[in-house]
Amino acid sequence: MARPVIIDCDPGHDDALAIMLAAGDPAVDLLAITTVAGNQTLAKTTLNARRVCTVAGIRDVPVAAGCDRPLIEPLRVAAEVHGESGLDGPRFPEPTVPAAPEHAVELMHRILTEHPEPVTLVPTAPLTNIALLLTRYPEVAPRIREIVLMGGSTERGNTTPAAEFNVHVDPEAADVVFRSGVPLTMCGLNVTHQALATPEVLARLEALGTPLGSLCVELLTFFTARYRRVFGFAAPPVHDPVAVARVIDPGIVHCVPAPVAVELHGTQTRGATVVDLHGVLGRPVNAQVAVTLETELFWDRLIAAVDTLGRRLRD
Ligand code: BDR
Ligand code: CA
Image (cartoon, rainbow, N blue to C red):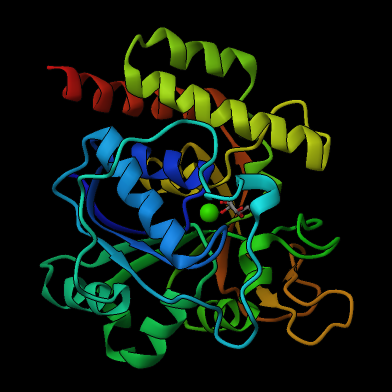
């Protein structure tokens, strides 16, 4: 049976693909898409979520805007990676999918309260909305089946030498989430850097022969150029769909249990995830930490989801 899921995102090229994977894969029942400030301002990430839903024909899923800044610090966006719009590359039509009138946190609270089954949250952005949900409505925690997030790293960062973007933008929010006691899976850079959109992947998307497949190629072409320029990568890592893939089939993303803490006070390391893979500190395990991606299964599933959405639009 399909698993009820809410995606909390900041589209973002890889968030766009995460939305398509969640909406197009039969293992997921996508209940809502909530947005937060991160890769770009809240106004832009919300517009982008509506754009993605419009071009992918996702019409029955509410899109709700959440927090427009981190809990403590001013927002730091990632225009160098995602462009001024947050989703540079393709030319998008005027979105026809509206934004819901509810705040993202209220929508999540309502769905968690009303849905007959516990719901999985998939944050692919700074954790501001999720932290606010857990602090404002702690009673909904048992209604969350698990949080499967893209963020952090067992190794180095991408925003500072030590910190990954989603955690670095709002470390206090990440700290709330990692200490919440809700079952948690962390898909960090160490695993998402295995999800590289190579020229072969782009060719497979183009070969789908749908406007949506071609739009994904345009997104990934922009992403490739930016990752080459900023990080020297030959092919860009599509981080966010990895978290969705873990929900779809745990066999695609292998994890190990480990204690994870968020560094809040380091002068050089604020926003780092300190992952005690060998348990040397003797602290309790609070997360499943993703370590290995079954790359072929991952791309098969992502491309199949884009195909499903593209055909649905055509037929
Ligand atoms: C994360 O940061 C964002 O730029 C991406 O969308 C992804 O969620 C990778 O560090
Ligand atoms: Ca993201």
